[in-house]
Length: 420
Image (cartoon, rainbow, N blue to C red; front, side):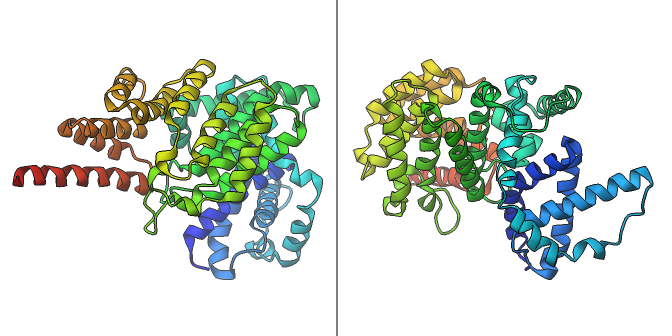
């Protein structure tokens, strides 16, 4: 087992479950994080030699718990730190832990962890940032990118959140029904951010992290069981299922991004699409529209189009206008601009996004969209500059390669014009 990329994927996928269990054991965010990191270090040393464990989460929980207990004993000088071999021989212990993971308290650990991170004592921005750090293990730069703020401000936000949780003596237990309702919006937002990190990774060599997408969908299903009549949770689950259905067609054989209009739609998962469409219809029957339902309705229009030219871009534009009323943000406006471009042309779309330049100056996708619109308008030099900015801000090789394709097209067009 020498594939370090596989090990990284396994550690990322196991993190939510392992962190949830370790937090329940130690009731201390910092100690749980340290325990998980120590387990990851031992995994990197052990798995290439002994091979992957049957259940990575069980292995990490067991090793992390032992490492943290050893640290507690060492700090209190009760016992000496045991030899690595005493902890590394995990055959029987791992099997026992894997069986225990089937128990309800282990299945609920991640959901419990989310509700703890979304405690009302924390401001909303701190809740979601803390959850992304603790549950997903995103780095500070990755979380800062998701919030469109600088790294120092995000680091301070997360540190304050941890301090508040510790100082407020937040109970490390599942909240009651009333508390769950109060924290529902923050938990839903956090689940969707987990999904987005999997759908379009903010760092590393991999553009899509399917395990995070699947974990977010699993968590949304758990949430829907707690709130079976909540249309926004139906909308959230529908949105993620419909987006995830396109995963098999989103990257080509070389790992480069394939635009929605260029994707092989026969690769889309029709079972997931059918589930997502049914959830959208069910949510809309409640006649209580909200942001997740509107985004799911947009995804449903894409899913229903057998061919790119069948897409109802005018309806998508109207849905984005509604979404802006519920959730005004520069990102929503930028996404709406794509629909405006398809329905009304590049000039109208460019007018829509130009006022966003200051707020989205550090956002890769803004410069990519702007470059594409400028290219459509024949403003080649400006388009080239926008694409250069997008490449500089790209978070993954796939994103950078996608922009380079546009630049190559510009250069080819320039040569043709010169030759003629």
